[in-house]
Length: 399
Image 1 (tube, rainbow, N blue to C red):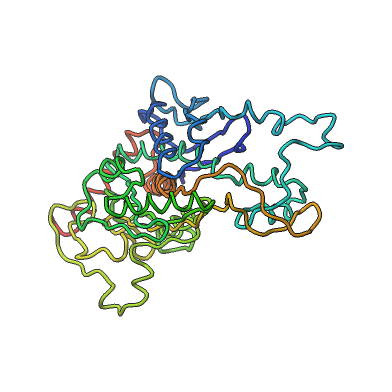
Image 2: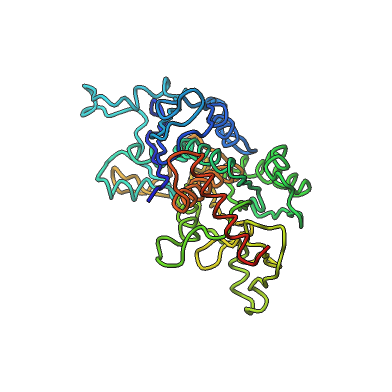
């Protein structure tokens, strides 16, 4: 069974980040500029810190691409950290003579509430939380977005699109139009907070400024929408093949994400079934959905772990960033005594960027489901299998 797999490597202030994605068919047109465009989107958003100015993320292909096309072999990409030159003494992989006596610079023992610092020290039996936080940092998501850009490019060849927008930030809700535009990202990229609601945007910006002055941070909610997915991806037959479960795992793996729902999942839980379940009717002209449609989409495009042919809609909740410039109470892990938490350079909010990261993770899960169902060593074969399946689905009711 063909599958899409990916992994990442690298520390926040190490020499580079590495992304490897495997299972992409041969013959997919792929340029570094397409991946770099997604990396640039990840770095945007009001409330980001100075690191976004230092780093100008660009990938270099190390394998899997030749003459602008994928080869079917693993695709390896590297993103070099510009800030590495300022952190060589701290992050040098080689041992140094004074490591045992003086220790490394920027040692961190005043662990930060909300971060992996303290739990990681216990789990991995370390004494310097730098060994934990450098990998736990959201900087790692740069490599995820690179892999997601490749998956996104594959899905685009099948006319499957993914977009996201912010619906809540720092206690402020943003309105969403009843009819979403065809190109969601083009419609919100002009907003510094990637939201449709200009009035809410102004209040959100004021809130971010207020929190920055107070040394505090903000969380929020993004929605991710996937269009063009045919009915029948995923499966009901085993827990680990349910596509909603696979998407949920991908979403909550994003740093600081603490919740997600499919469609209005939590609101649905408060209503009777008659006000939740989507009625079905014939709909000629919708071959990917079998020429039927749901009158509503409260299921968020998934029923029984299988796509319905309606747009997939996910809501993803991100907690406030854990590094506060006005530190919280903690302990010093070197002594076990009370202390104020350390303050590392940080964003006030990264909710707009979280939407871009969520898009990438969704792209990887959907691409995996596509390859799982349709197979194919080459894009021509995958497209042929995909088109044949859609034609079969479309013929079920003789339309």
